[in-house]
Image (cartoon, rainbow, N blue to C red):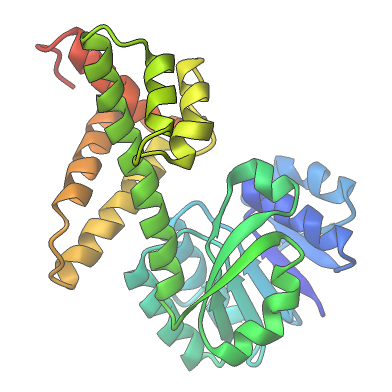
Length: 291
């Protein structure tokens, strides 16, 4: 099987390395030519996908890049041969996923959406979490390849459900960023030590992995610079769009999105999953401060 991977960023490069480590021959391409040396160093070939590609793997920054890369007269879907397969690891919108599913079916491409969670550390150790959606037969056939870079693989159902699951997981994550940030500020304003408050919360009904694992890093000044603030907003926008299309009341999602959009206006498109908390702290220290 000839495998081509497009998108050698922090996740894509690690996925390519895992595929090579599991004995797969893989050809990698990225818009940044400087990545070539890293790709060749772990035994992969470099270059755009070829006509004889059996399996395409895409790991792109978000929905805009995925649409531009795959669709249109010169998109990759039009260049893949009929009967080949495609794994997409991008965190994309369910609406785009539905569009891609139709386009792949028209071109007779077996398409499996496989957005991933876990971040660069999990990717480097081959322990990503995958939310796979598409035809059951396609999932069963490609699952052994997915297992090369994934520690947990969840089959979520038909196309769209994988992208949606990833977005919902992240919605809860980004909601906790805002909620925990507010709790800490309220506690500090009343004289509570943040570390002591954390211990109390961990022993109560609101205990969570976020409080256990992430809050100590945040208190130490770590902003979790593994994901861009602009990409966070892109994902939250996709959730709000989905809620509108399906007439689901999602006021909390809208509020969380609003806080992150304000943080993006303040800090710009930089990496930092906890920057919403920093934004709230700016507002607290100066109530008249405007983004």
